[in-house]
Amino acid sequence: MISIVTKWWCVPGREQEAVDALKDLVRQVEEGEPDTLMYCLHTAVVEGSLPPPTPSEVIFMGAWTSRQAFDDHRTGPIFTDWLDKNLDLFVQNDGKLYVSAEFADRFAGFVRGAAIG
Image (cartoon, rainbow, N blue to C red; front, side, top):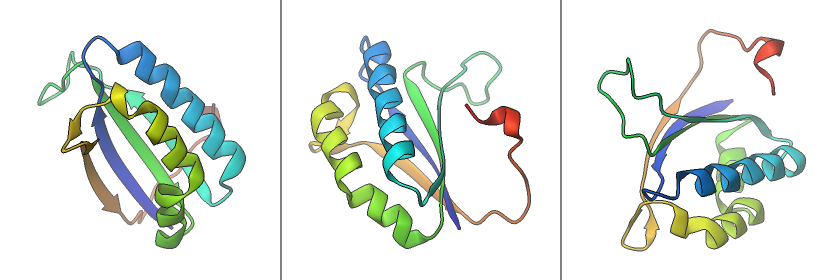
C-alpha cells in the first residue's frame, strides 16, 4: 500500500465551486477505481492551525494498493478528464496544477468505520 498527502489551493473566490467539483471527483474515483483504498478531501481549518494555512487550501489524504495503482489513478481517464474540466478552479504553475505532495508508508494506525462517509 502507498499513501499520499497532497495540498492544492483553490482560486480565491471560487472555493465552493472547487469543493463541489472535488466531491464529484471523489464519487467517480470511489465508483471506478477499486485499487483506491482511501480518498479523503478536507478544507483547511485556519483557526488553531500552525502554521496557519490559507483559507483556500484543500488537503487530500489517499491510499492505493500499490504505487502502480496510484500512477494509474493519476494518469487514468477519471482524474485526467476531471482535471481538464476543472483546472481553472485551482492555483496553477506554468499551466499545470500547483500541488505539494508527500508519499508515506503507513506503519501503524486504523480508520474506524464511523470515519467512512
